[in-house]
Amino acid sequence: MVKYYQGVNELKCEWDQVFSAFWQRYPNPYSKHVLTEDIIHREVTPDNRLISRRLLTKTSRVPQWAERFFPTNVAHSAFILEDSVVDLKSKTLTTFTRNINHARFMMVEERCVYGMSSENNNWTQIKREAWISSNLSGFSRAIQASGEI
Image (tube, rainbow, N blue to C red; front, side, top):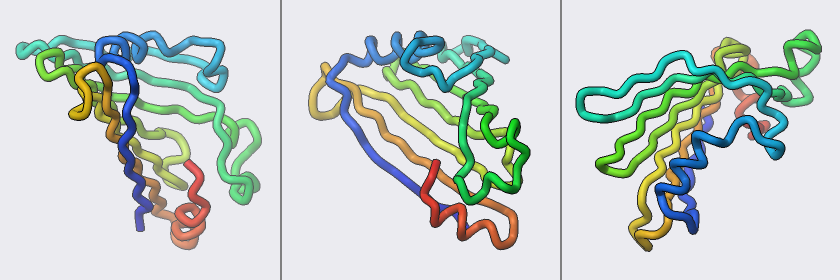
């Protein structure tokens, strides 16, 4: 069973600004929950797309009802793998993030596509999708019902 979220937002900023800010977002004083950011892989493809893979360490809390199943030091941190593809020709940035620890208990995946807004060329549209799932019998419904990402 999978819980699915989707949404579309408009940022009143040009795509170039959003693209630039994306790469400069960590570290920053407003995201103290992000502890580390490591680039694992980065390449420019023959068709001039930038492909990156980063490992992020974040402070994170499992839902309160699930804390008793994890040691304290494990329940409050998450390792996130982020894959991204930048296509300057089409002016799109696509990211796919997923947790790599606690994955047997709960998997959270998110895909975001940043592109030029169809409403206004000076704005950026973000299309977000997220999936929450669990393969543990009995936990699946509780995780999805909690609605916590």
